[in-house]
Length: 353
Image (cartoon, rainbow, N blue to C red; front, side):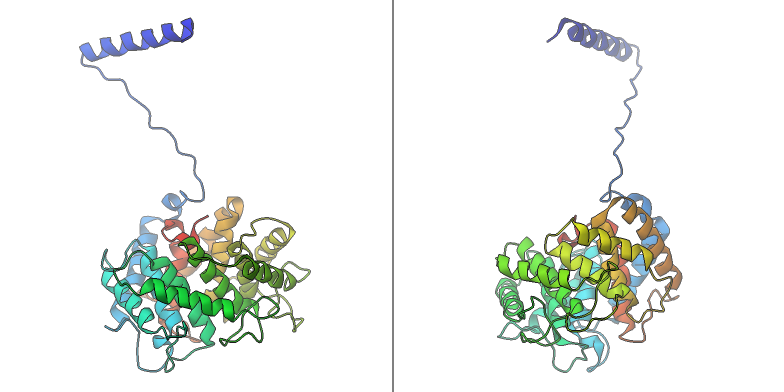
């Protein structure tokens, strides 16, 4: 040890000993932890925000049936996507199957999704209303990957593997996916559901062929318009829209593309075209992806975006704790809102940076 350093250390020890003998104490300052995207929840999730989130989660828990679904026999209440999103909302709060305030609800959701798996790997409830069965399959596969390892059910690995194989087999020649479980057409909206599910499955140890991911990246990049947003399909030279552009950006992030001109242009598009209220019929869907995109981007993108959508959602929350959606269901809107608001919790692997 250098002589000057040794002398300084000796002096400090002497002072500490003297203070101890005289009954004094040396105040040790707590180290300051720089705020990052991951630690921003301390500031963004205020006590009022947390309380409001919990009222939403409680509303969902009361609405859930014993079999894990919501509402009546037919309708979006028995859609595997809605059940999976509700399960992810409860998981985002820290609950897991059988554990935590919403452990029973997570267990019911998990059982419902697993019981909806067909021998082919397809996750679908025929009597449940659906905008497109592959939406449900994608969200359900994502949910199983997130809950994998948390449940004692022995069939989850086998069913998750089959669900993943089905997604791979349904990728079309362009590199994307469409409404049905067949490789015919493709659109950005369904594609993001499948690539997120594949990313989540890979995160928990399942093998995903590289060419599947590469072809998906190429398809999504080709769907980007000159303004930075994304069109719906390659065959339709449609204009960019907020929801599908948020989805396109998250599809690239999920496929492992974190920088490059496509990312910068997409982020700039979202900043220019953020909606101010629930006038977009795909409001919740769009913001579910937009908040993920901003979280991955970090920095000012995240710091500006999350407080805006947080305050917007809290302003739109109903007195009973739910959120309203006339297109699908209030359960869907409430699950989506609770997931968006809990992104700063950083609990689920698929949402981590």
